[in-house]
Length: 167
Image (cartoon, rainbow, N blue to C red; front, side):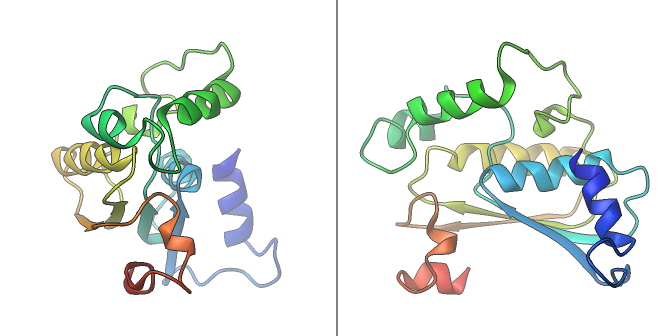
């Protein structure tokens, strides 16, 4: 699982062992969910000092205001596409509360400081807000940045929009 991968990297599977005093996880979109799941699944997460989660999809939720406003086909990531991704990821399995497949439904306590980045015109924008609320309620330090006027995937477009370079 993803937690085993993080632990293997920490112990040197890619060469040298990772400096556990300076380790952060970052992921965007599905990678943000995987980064969060990895943190939650680690038996010892003390070496993870921080995380950056960029426009993540943390549970198969499609009835948010951002899905209604931005998921209908005018922007790259549609609600229909997200349903397809989740169906392919979960199949017919309905994850139980606390399953790492849907990390926003897990116990979010005792996590390192997390920065959440959202795209202003993204069907997943409200998932970032919901996760920020849940992280705060669990007692975590969390910062949210919303980059107005950019869509899902902007973080990888550093050669174009100034918002991507700033992020």
